[in-house]
Length: 409
Image (cartoon, rainbow, N blue to C red; front, side):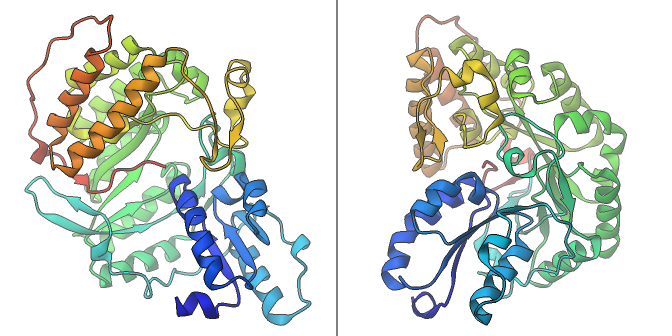
């Protein structure tokens, strides 16, 4: 509290939807301690919610490649007249020379998510980014309104120095947080090659689009050889119509082809989904569950992925679609999303029921197999229903490496 009370400036980092909501919740108690310091919000979600954040008292909003703007704003208040705030762009995509992050004042890596290995042992996990932004324009993606199809690399020597420092702090595994690790594939492959040479015992995981995994499938073994254990990919749906509406750039068959190629290369593919959207029907949801069972993917999908509801943030490309504009209600600043209701009320009811069930099941320590079949039963309980056969588990949970904190925005 003393640090907050004595601060000359206050800045909240908003890299994700959840972080933004938490920052807003913290703002009132922080302002009770220090009401005089100028206030800045920076990160991906800051410019997307600029109007609301300014209504909460924000003096500066920074997004995209925000570091130079943050330094300029700090100097302005430290030096007096200096740079005027209106000269600092809200969104900057300028190329920057980065410095290795100083993580020494952060909590120990042991307090963050870990990687659980097939033998049940856990690896202390660090985090870094080799690039930011994305050259793709998926309609639902929160990166798009800020980066508009552009991405920026972090210099390889900076990424490697960051990882070196985290290894010194005890990291045994690294999560690359890039929106798409293959946006610059030459940069990515050279980086993991150098990483493996420096730290041959270090494992890592990445996030890559299905489209890129298919196009560059000849490099999958290179990922495995350099220590990659897990590839996360935002599949979002197995309905080709929904995939077209989201402008995902892949099809259901592309996803299944990538799954087989990852397995052949010895990589675990961890697909993520947005199963509750305005176009998914109850039968379509059951079809998704059936496919996960058929393809032995139950253990590779974090249960919360089967209860995710589509968020439509400010500036979303989804608003380009007339059928979305006609369906959404007012923008809810506290939820940071436009309100919408499913045309079939059963879907909204099921989504809320599943969220409660999954939260309780994980708190009780149930396995992904047990939670999946609980989801299955609840999806069947909404008539009319085509009865799907219950399939026995065919893969032990222990056979899949997984992060203890599921990936989602």
